[in-house]
Image (cartoon, rainbow over all chains, first blue to last red; front, top):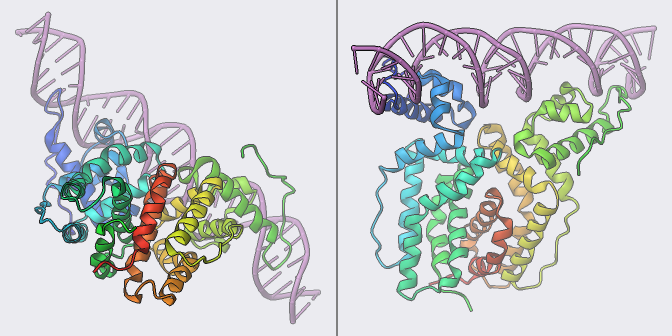
Length: 200
Length: 200
DNA sequence: ATATATCGAAACGATACGTTTCGTTTTGGA
DNA sequence: TCCAAAACGAAACGTATCGTTTCGATATAT
């Protein structure tokens, strides 16, 4: 990270269709801006300059800032692998959380995620995209972990929504306060509570 | 809510000291802007216009936007009463959560809170204020609830941090996704899990 | 009396917004 | 083969907000 990384071959149009090189350059620039300056420095102008792309090109393909942020996140997330289901829900959740926090810490994705949540607080379209597109996609694997536990008879179907909210909220709390380091010690205990059989 | 509500007596200086009328007008204006336009419309310029106050007056007394947001929140929060400790932690937590969500829903405080979290994602001073000032103050009563449960021997001291993070995160998740209505059905189940005796 | 601190108003230069205009490039269908 | 259509980057548009500075007026505290 750091340094100017554009080659500047001055990408022109390749005809009446989207230029993949421009798309890649814009995503890379957005990622770099977030990595270096965080959400505070994240502007369409900054991304445009960094990518050597025109602002109309960005606005043409990403309707809102949140759409761009979600694409940046998704591009990075593709690299994160999903671990198998071992049959111990609390353990699986802890492993999942640890991997997610590694991913958030080791890449600009933690900052991207925080930017997306922030964006959703000022833009109603961004909030809707977060709720209807981003969250369902990003919690898919998580839901399979809970579904497997229900399958095994460990949990009742009824309590899943509350447990899911507890899990997601736990992660959000630590990432939004930029305290992932301090939170690591609490992961195991929290996951045991989330995975506990329903108290009477 | 709605309509222009400033009397416009043109407050001048009252000498070499802070004018309480200006302070009140600015807090009221900030509250009104948040109530009507949310975080997206919250700017110092807008608050200044609405309050009939000069921008230097705002910047003189509130170093950052987050400081102003925290004051708006605190002014409103003063009206919220704290219920007694009944001796049933899960029940106490559920009552506390219900009251908090009522407060967030019935006043502009939900939007103020969301604005504060968003602000902390782009401004490091705001994040620090959130962590060191706002959160400790706003979780004080909550901590007494947990402390009382430890006192009664229901919980071990060791697991408190994880339970606290679960509780806070649960609330943040629903308010930040603007889903307090949908979350109400999950409160009781979630609080039972948070208050459960440590699973082996 | 006078230094001091506040007040609102107005303007500053800088930056970002989202859009429009422009000249250029290449596609794909007639 | 020609040409409408679409995408490209560059530049500029008018508007808005940023945080700061300057200003004249006001009232306090010494």
